[in-house]
Length: 376
Ligand SMILES: *Cc1c(COP(=O)(O)O)cnc(C)c1O
Image (cartoon, rainbow, N blue to C red; front, side, top):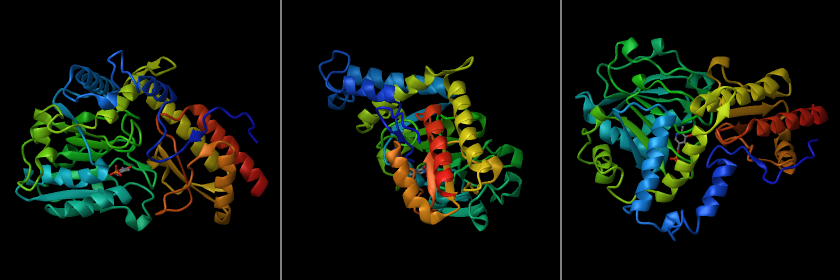
């Protein structure tokens, strides 16, 4: 058993999830007095000079990190991924007179998106992997897209089922010129994205980039201005974009912490790589280590197709499910926290987001091997 324990345990929560330790230290140091202003960030006017500089730096750093082209607006909003399931159709459904959005359902999150959108127009189920227990993706050539949809929705990383797109679908290649809407909540800033294939991407911050309460929306300019009359002003992307996300008070603390995370990510290095390339290389290494350990063992299993396995969320099962309670208890005693699987799927799940170092995954793999030796 691994007896060397560090000060903080390793946190495998799916979200709200671990933040980089360096970011937590910096936020703690700034708590009472940000950069000599005499104010904590939570106490500042969102329209003041100090917060303006925090906001601008967060935006500039995320744009650089994700190589965001200038025709995309970055919006700081609230309501999380589930609110976007309504806000997206309220903004985009009227783009096409068909008032139909197409959905590719590959797990719980895209299923929820499809269900919610039906309140604002037609939701066409273009493809689903439900008949296979959401164990993989549906190849885009098999999608049954509707005629001139308002948009096509995918969830590019299904946090519960552990299914991730390795490559974004090319809608134009499929003969569809509708914008692709991507729920990137649980893998934002973990890998490079091909923006030429995306119309809009959204993400709650609490999985990979910050505290709960902040939602990022990245939207191509030409998609603004189609909101339904029922859309609240504070959720009309055009209003939010035109006011620089200051139409109403934005989640200032969340923007500040996310900004610290963006800077931390930009500063990452790995071999000769920097920034997102370094972060992605490390994520590939971490995921390979964990999936290898699972695949080599006959005690642990992961059911997802090899080409669709998530680098961020790894659900796994014990050969003897009755031992899950023992596994979680022993893991906790070894400084490995929040490994319980989502209730929809059962089993166990390790979320290994950007903030999880390779050492944390090594500690988990060592523990798993030990547990197996004692119980298999
Ligand atoms: C967590 C999650 C959501 C829901 O986020 P909330 O902030 O709880 O609304 C939506 N989509 C994905 C992919 C998620 O992981």
